[in-house]
Every structure is written in structure tokens, then in C-alpha cells.
Length: 140
Image (cartoon, rainbow, N blue to C red; front, top):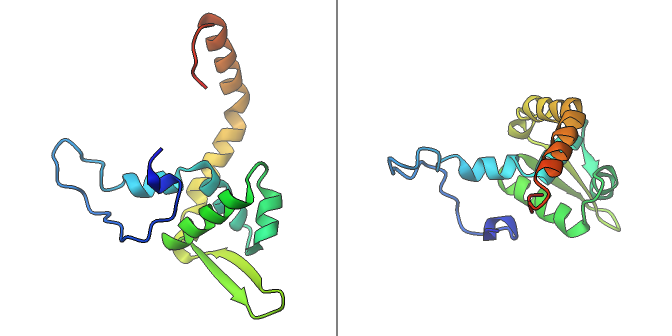
């Protein structure tokens, strides 16, 4: 796993294509890594319904740890997809909402989520069939 997947980096990201003829996609890998990450997709889907507080997001996204949610929203904030607002209360209240750029992703992410729900039974059956015909595989 690359460091970009485990920590929020402070160095500026270069999203320009690298210029190598044999790497035509390297200019978009970083962005696709972020928006294709399962937790990012789920956070974007949840925030498409409007602003949420941290605990609301955590309760809505089954299986996400506090640390992973923190990393995910920080990464999305760094990428300009999520806006974090801290309210001067005691204790401090924080909410997250999609930016205009983040909101422009929602139709794509929702389509992907809908597709996943529609096809999950077919995919589960295909996996079962594969596992039956390849009992020694270690693919998960």
C-alpha cells in the first residue's frame, strides 16, 4: 500500500500528466485513487444528502473506524471535495459538507452505488461459482 493511502501528505501534489508516452494515465491516478476509494465513495454518498457531523457520518457508514473516517474526510477536504466547518461552541461542533466540486461528483458516485446495489447478487453468485471451480485460489 502506498503512503498516500495511509496518511495525509503535506507536500503539494502534481496532477499534471508525467509526460511519459507509456504512462498516459499517470495524470489522473491520484484523483481516481481518492474518489475510487471505498470510504471516500461512501462519505460522498452520505454527504450528498446534506451536511453531517462526524458522528453522524460514522454511524451512517457501517464498518468505518474513527481513524479511517478522520483520514478520509481530511483527504477529501485536502482535495477540495469536502468543506469542514468548526463552530465555536463548547464542546466544538464540526460539520462536513460537499464543496461545489464534491457535489459535482454525486451523480457519478450515486450511479456507481446504484449499480453496485443492482448487481451485488449477480457478483456474489459469480464469486461463488469461481470459488467452486478454483478451490485453491487466494483471491479475495
